Every structure is written in structure tokens, then in C-alpha cells.
Length: 570
Image 1 (tube, rainbow, N blue to C red):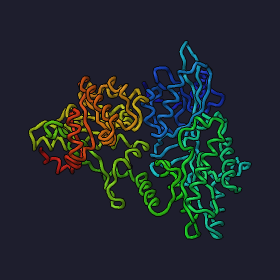
Image 2: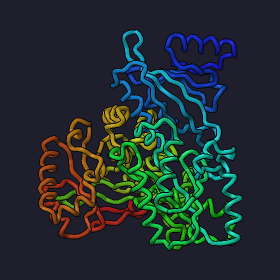
Image 3: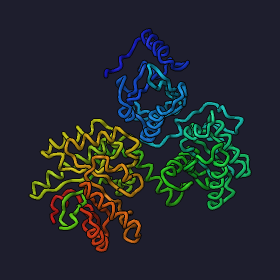
């Protein structure tokens, strides 16, 4: 591998011509990023990197390494697109895609492109190109700001679709005369749905939506295009919230059934944020931003719509605070780690501690990991966050062993997306050495926010970590992503049963029988079983009899500060 050299204009043109002739790329290649992808999952670039906003990178590298530079929401889709394309037998088949790339300023730039399959030298290759969408900058880690959207004249006037510049004018006029519901609607996975429905352009998608909107609301409503995939609707305040809920559910139903292949729609087609009962007391910019914030909060929950009012408004503001402030909180070390003891099932003595990261905010109080771990993954911050937690784990274990003679481990949560960082094993190993510890002192709990099966590079990392001596545990088994079919093919030493699954098994004979068989199967493979969420004596006795190796939960101990845990001995 070698670093890309910035080619003078003449040399770049020659290189591009050669790549175009040899790989039969695409018609318009100047100022685009050209690439090829082989069956060994290596991606190679042919471009002048001075023509784009990408950071300097190697010209040929494994796909897993390149994916680290993408927005975390886009990695799985791009990985699936490229790796499954090789299974197609039609040479010269072409598809389109888009993704977000982290730029030098810490934000994300949208890119769109196309890729073609081609047989070359008796191998199936993918060749393609992509280029930036200049009008779609996302100022990560904050929410998309309305000032970054396109303000040019709309190309969709025939669809009653207008640009953002028009919505501020219309909203300002409307607020001075009557109340409104301001609706921000985001089409989820727009490009994927357009491809799945075999539509050729986004305006066809918008046309189907516009027709469904007219059918449901019985009004001629304008649609304002903020950016590709985001629209605003100004609805006269003629209905209450309950009726609006019903209308939006009906809209989703009508839109879904208007699509050519409605059976392929599995999730909500769109997320909705509403600023209800707007009057002229706030500026149009304020109202639009709050509706947008409610929409982006709604994309993280299961309900179809979120209203920016009362308790929901507080939840939206908390969510926005996390998005805006997480990067700074990690950099300034505003996060801290608690340690919850894990006990031997039979002796009921402490044998390990699990690290549980927290975030203390003066404005919002204690923020729990389920509120910000997913956001750290989406913003590409999971690696620095994980390194911080592991460093705190090393500090704690070093302190604990200075005060106690017994052998104790520390369990540290590691995201599947962390495993895509090729430097992670080296970072963890070096931190062990710096604190005079060994890898065997740690159990790395793999948390599946995305399935391991989708990331072969992550599975390879597991093998390397096991070789270094780290103990490996699969966390939250029973929560939905994990499969026992592939578990024993991976180098795991431990399995942690999800607390909700553990509680369900107390009163469900089928779940209880399944867990009993699972524990026996784990013991046959020399895999230890930890049961989380032990809340009472009944649960403790149940899982002691069932054969679990270790137990964890508030019945034994709540999470402790580093100082309290360092003195804990039982």
C-alpha cells in the first residue's frame, strides 16, 4: 500500500484515461473519484484527491478500513451493496448509491455515485465513481441545520414542491394571520426505497407522496423541499392532535400502498416532527428548527410522529443536547465510569466488575449509555469513547489489585463498530502494558448494535484479540441480533443473557427450557454463562439451580464509583 500522490493536471488526465479505457468506467469521470473493488474486498482509487474534500488516504485498502471514514448510519448499507454485488452474474449491471464522508472539519459531506459489475481478466470486478453533493453538507455532530439546505429554485414545481427559501416567506405571512401545525417529514432511507421500488428518480417518489397527501388531507398543500429527503408542510390548525395522529397514520398507509412494490416496505417510510399550534410569537427559523429537531428525535423512536410540546419537547431537547455535545464531552472527559460487581453463582463472591459509562450534565443530569452509545456510533466517536472506558478500566484494576490479593477481572463493553478499527487490539494491548496488566485480566463484551454476521472484518478482529489473550463475551444474548447457530463458530469464552430475557424465563416455560438447554450447551463447549438483571432472591435461586456460572444485578450490588468499587470485597 502507498499514499496517494497529488498528480499534476496532465498526469491525472492520463491516469484517468488509462483507468477509463482499461476498466470501462463511466462517461463523465473528470473531478470524480474513480474506484474498483475486487473479490478480496479491497477497494482501490484512481483520482486526484485535490479535487474533492476527502482526507488523505491510501489508494488501495481493505473495505473495512475505508468504511471507518463513512458516517456510521451508512456503513452497513455500503458494505452490503459492494459485497453482495459480487454475487450477481450480469456483467455491466449498474446501480446508484449515496453516503456521507467525514471531512477535515469534523462534519459530513454527502457523496453520490454509481457502480458497475464487470468481468476483467477472468475475475468479477466492481468499478464505479462518486462525487460530492455540494448542497447537502451536514454539520455533524449537531443536527442538520436549516441554513445548510439548498436555496435554489425547485426543479419540482409541477409537484407543488417548493424550495426552503419559500417556506420562510410563507410561514412568516401565515403566522401573522392564523395558527398552524408545522410538519417536518423525513423520508427514511430514501435512496434504498427508490431502488427497491424500481423508480428512476426521487421526483417520482415525491409525486406518489404528494398524491397520497392530497387523498388523505383533502387539501391542496404545498411541499417545501429542505434537502433531498426532507420536506416541510404548513397545515392550517383545523384539527387536534388526536385527529392529526390518525391522518398521519392514514397518510403512511396510503403512501405505502401507492408504491409499486408495497410488500417490500418493512419499516416506517418516514419520520415526522410537528410544532403544533404555531402563532406569531416565534420566528419562522425557530419554529422550523424545532420541528426538524422533533423529526430527527422521532427517527430514533418507534412512534410515527413526535410533537414539540410539553414532555416530548423536553425529550427532544435532551436528544439534541446529546447530539450537539457528545464530541465535546468525550474530548473534555465529562464522562465517567461506574463498576458493577459480577458474582460467582455458587460461592457468591465477586469475580469481576463490568464497566458502565455515564455522562454527567449540569443541564440534563445523569445521561445513561442507551442515550449516547448509539449516537457515538453514528458520529464515528465510538472508538475514542471505547478507548477512554478501557483506560479507566485499567486504572481501576490497577488500583483494586494494590488493595486486594484476590484475582479479579474487568468486563469492558466493545461495539461491533469498534472492531472495525484496525488499531483497537494494539491500543488495548498497549494500555494493558502501561498499567502492568495482561489481556487475560479483561473480558471484552461484544455488544451487537449491528449484527456481527455483516462484518467479516470484525470477526477477524475477534480472533486476533483472542490470540492476544483477551477473554471474549457476547453481550445481551436474547435481545434479538445474536444467533446460537453462529455463536460457537466464534472465539467466545463467555455468554451474557439479556436481563429482559432472563426475567421472561421465570414465568415462561418455553423460555426457561431454552435457557436450560443453552446453558448446558455452553458448558459442553467450555463457555461460561453470565445472567444479568438479577433483581431478587427468586431470580438468584432460579439461575443458581439452572447452572449459570455468574450472576449480576441490583440484588447483589448497584453500579459503584471507582473509589467505592476499589474498596469492594466480598
